[in-house]
Image (tube, rainbow, N blue to C red; front, side, top):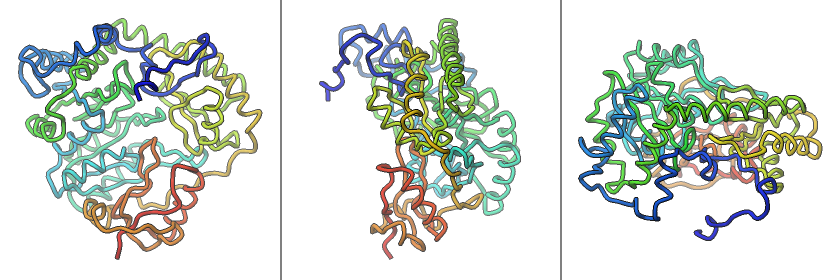
Length: 458
């Protein structure tokens, strides 16, 4: 593996692969300056334990505690905890802190699979709510206020809830109107946890109680560095500390802790804002050139995420990804109707010329009539697995074809990765309509979804 990580593409810069994937630092171009300076030190010199001067995530004094307090103040939060197990680990810790065992938590269907893992660890009951669906692209869209009002009413009619989770922005850069949604959650007497792994903490200004950030997805940090931000009276800091104690390593990487601090501080600094504006200017030129070539882009809220609407070009996004990869263009997220590119904190040199040229060639060679509209998943507005999530996941299971799955209880998630969003959750009863939809999805995700599914053995 070390040899693969050390490999460098030969030749001049314009002949190298066009890497438009995460981490957002783009092979170091966009690392936060303090982090880049640290990495120039002799390798391993920064690999230190929780010495008294450094401290740890849950210690009241030391460099880590000082950094967490400074980042909380910078971002407008009351408290900040760094994480070394990515946004995934902090989402799980936040969920366990908000919800006692046996309680119901309201989760969107576009949740990251780590939240399901958190439900298993915390013995929580996931209540899954459906989302608006765009048939042209096959993508879920964020809920608006009337949608969430209906969801809350339906979920609370079936029993009390302990917490609500929203994802904003999504992987593709679609953002919900959290200013409108947060008061609805609070009016129901519930805390709101926002998975903002692909954002920069904007949910705090909207009043969210807990917000999870990924320093490598929308900042200049290393993979696995993340932060959990908290404010308001609807959480217990002691409960969060307890959850972190359960779920985080007792020997956190000092490098990853420093990465979280450096990324957050730089993003909020004048220099970081200047760099962001420069990246957005590159993105604007890129999008204008794509528009000039007639390349359809999905409108989103993140200027550094470019989403090509491949279905409008008659191309499956996974097929487009393979074609581009063979020609040195590496995207971040292929899906049946779209292909997402991450431009990063410092976009690759020449991207505003190279990417439109490559996409135009893709259309010439692979394009055709637009794909047929996608069918939304046949799901109720709100649903809870029929069998407890942890019981279904641990139960004896057998593999059946999707054609034979109707009537069975799912034993494992069906989850193409990326994006890591489950199409099927353990404990859900698979009816005929759902089985037919999953079979159609398997054809749209070649190599990502098998034509069999694990079900609970009767």
